[in-house]
Image 1 (cartoon, one colour):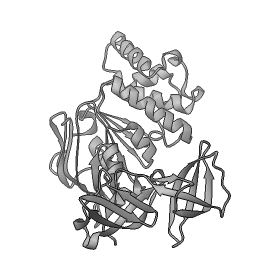
Image 2: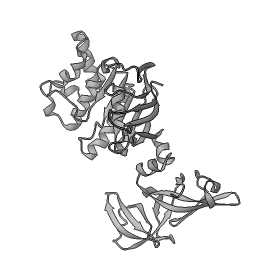
Image 3: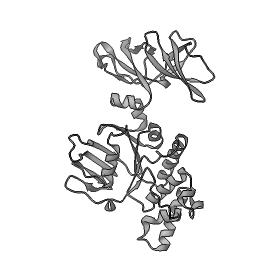
Length: 354
């Protein structure tokens, strides 16, 4: 492991509950990790502890095979070889782009410093604005300047704290992919904090979902989405609703019966004996519900949100249960109209009925 966090806790003075509680995670060299969770869940506190800006009360942090933090030891930030990109970019307005990037390279000879600045500006595709001042740049360009400045000293680890929060939604999603490609080209190990799952999935090799200081799951984006480790992760990652279900087997074939319809022999699903009498709840996301005019399962449209290529329909079944469904926008049905739907899913996410 390049970054290894073991049983880490951070407790602020005067608080009974730790801000970060017994968190363990790791990143291999060149991997990008993302901490995802609601505001106040402890993800930024964890990032600050890795940077050396917060002390730890339990556990340890290892970086590039060095122990950098325990309750008894805390290397200062400047000795950890950690770069950081902040929400507000923190660019110096009186310095050009090149001068901003060179700020952390003052110890290098001038020729070597200029060479490194040119390298990272080319990496982030900003060579043409090297002599421009930050105020003349777009938000996305300013973000890439901040990234270049953090990468210039070649840190062992790059930390990014909500780096896209000041940008509009469309630019954020596009820039998340751009930043991932930049970090991969630079072979940089990085850990980012966000509350936006679209950013997390666009950036991450590994995703950690946090709540109230606890890390619920640390896994790949695919596994986190399709095999959530807790109800909180299932609800936080992706939009969906819980529907009652009964799991049965007949001649060795598994069947999942729900008010939205039945599934026969899905690829991934617990066996009936995992729950009393096979009764449980299934998470049904909008992409699990398929528009099918021939289906016997009918639902009334109670809300429709136009998304361009699709509508996001909120549908109500006879028993009052509501589900979501993505439907191509050329199927422009009216509010109150009944449409046919069916379930289509391979990964069945189940939990015990509360």
